[in-house]
Length: 143
Image (cartoon, rainbow, N blue to C red; front, side, top):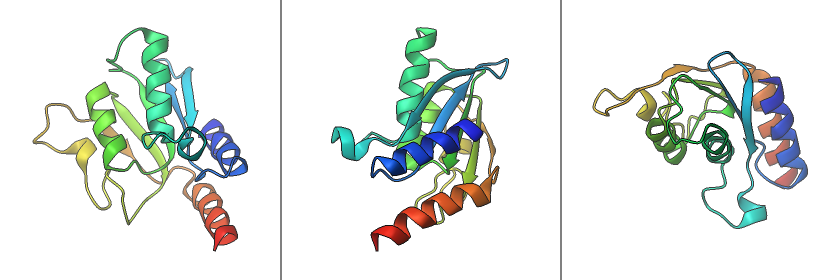
């Protein structure tokens, strides 16, 4: 989570919503990373999770990331939750809950939805306070 928080700070410095993500392999080694880059790229899918999942898929040479862990500073949205399910990531660890748009247990629970063909383990609230502080500072400065 320390690296994901660092990436979130980098995103904020680039005027992006401060969210960072890393993908770990089965042994816990960092395989890929990403941060929000939607404003920089003009890409609506430029969320930290998507950026990190794409980099991880390139690194392993496959879309199938079973056995991997995604660590992200903010609870994934519906789009990112869908990508997580499609990538077969085994575990998602996140910092701050997103009561407005979260899809890993707060508003929706896409990642663990029993109706879908694949589900991941979800662990929320890791470094919650640090993740919330970054988001609050970012939005306070813009209002």
